[in-house]
Image 1 (cartoon, rainbow, N blue to C red):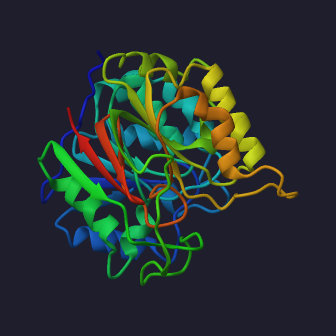
Image 2 (image 1 turned 135 degrees about the vertical axis):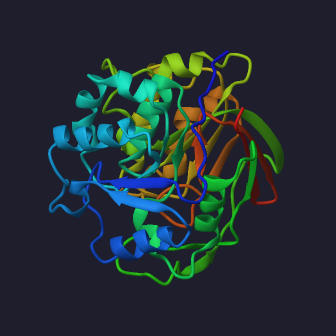
Amino acid sequence: MGIIIYPEKLKKGDTIATTAVSMPANKEKIDIALNNLRELGLNVIETQNVRGEGIVSSSGKQRAEEFLELYKDTDVKYIIASRGGEFLMEMLPYLHSQKDIIRNNPKWFQGFSDPSLLNIYITTNFNIATINMENISEYAMNPRYKNINDTIEFMFSQSKEYEQNSFDKYQKEEYEEGNLKGYNLTEENIYECSKNDISFEGRIIGGCIDTFNLISGTDMDNISNFVSQFDEEGVIWYLDNCELSPCEFYRRLWYMDQMGYFKNIRGFLIGRSFMQKNNDDSFSFKSAVERALEKFNVPIVYNVDVGHIPPQMYFVNGSYGIFKYKDGKGKLIQKLI
């Protein structure tokens, strides 16, 4: 049975950091976000690349070096990605060449979208829990929505168990740029499942599926070995699709299956997606999921609060999860055991 390492939680006066592991920070939001976190009683620092320019904040080597400096700094307790992006994978070979720094200095890392590749790399290679949740910009929101407050509570709480319920509404369009006042929640939030009342349990792992294949088959890929540790407990995969067409989404799911990532599967949580159909409408997003995953004969829940259509719950990679679905609503319990 695998043993998950849960880093220390925060207390007032602790230092947290943000670093741009992919794109540089949103210039409009970064100072507001940092000040809002300071108002929580935290010391907040940033690395040099946070205020960079372009599609990536800096070279892969520099991003890795700045990330590792935070990891070596014993004062830093928690790291939040500055933003999503496209090319986080460029920094991973440099991290992997100095992997003992991560192994010997466990601390929380939080991010989603492109940074979810770093989440899954850390959790599956070192059994260190990570958090799939909003990047630093969302902490500029005023007033903060419940999902942000829930994550702040998680940061500080010494509890070993956390419960989140599906949200009542969601925002039709992706939220990131410009809006500091909160989400525009206009759409009724209804989860879907083939069964009306179901519960399943297992170790939680997942993130943005667009990124996972970038390490598959390399020496940085330990995903199959990670899920193999949980023969008795099983595994729950949660999946966020950002930009993949249904056909490409199916290809990725097929490839993950061939790589052994779905061993010990107990259930799938599929996030809301913009990419519902191919150009000719012949193959839908749901068709892709069914074609790839129905053979496992485990629950598949659609429209889950994870990913690029907000709001999203926080998912703790490596935690023991219990997911309950009934009448279009979901409840996620995560235990740090």
